[in-house]
Image (cartoon, rainbow, N blue to C red; front, side, top):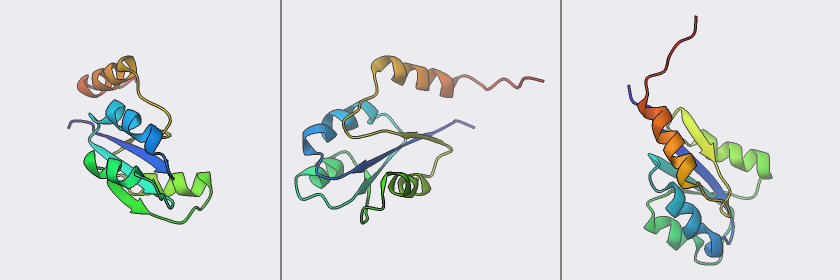
Length: 106
């Protein structure tokens, strides 16, 4: 069985950062975005990238991130902030990790 990765992002008014972030994780199997009341172009950017968007009131960082994780369908989850990006090296490491069979240590 092939491993799959969900990326979760919580946002509010992140139009200046979001495109760069989403470009860096566009290869993920799914992107879950929890928006807490954006009034800028954040949601339009997220839609263009095919994100699964959930609208929620701000619950605090921990609870809002947990809500994003709870909506992810895959066993592997990367929680990232909108002002961060996944480097090419980290992307390569993820792909290598998911393409190589796991070895059980006895």
